[in-house]
Length: 179
Picture 1: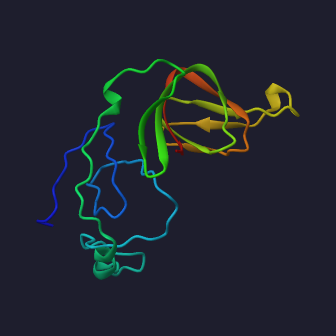
Picture 2: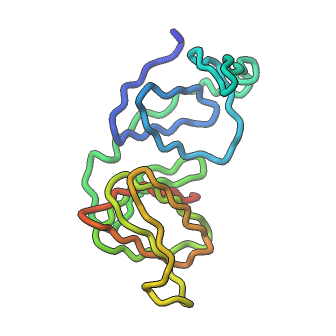
């Protein structure tokens, strides 16, 4: 543990962590980790945590060292330190094949989908609904998904358009697309 640096973080910090970078999350943190789908985790250290069977979880030191990158990761950026206009996404990071956007929804916001990429929408604050367009149904019968802090909706590339409705005030959103 003496080989690692402790990086103090605050709400809204963005830390691009390149693949192969050894990293850990401190106690009490809630993060949005944007990455490709993978079931592979190599543990160098596990703080004495027990697995589901009550035994220490397996460490993978040799395998982890084989894929570890020894480059220093980029510095922390603070994209939430500035105000955004309502219903206007702003690109805050392009990294490892993904674009990460920050946006604020006020009222209703009609979005046009992209046939080239999905859009994962994570609700940071506020409450509302997401309703996709369906020419077959009247507006009142169109499917709706509730949006609450911490909820995430995957809008597929096949969805031509959708509308985000904010219940009160504003919805703070983090949106991820393929770059």
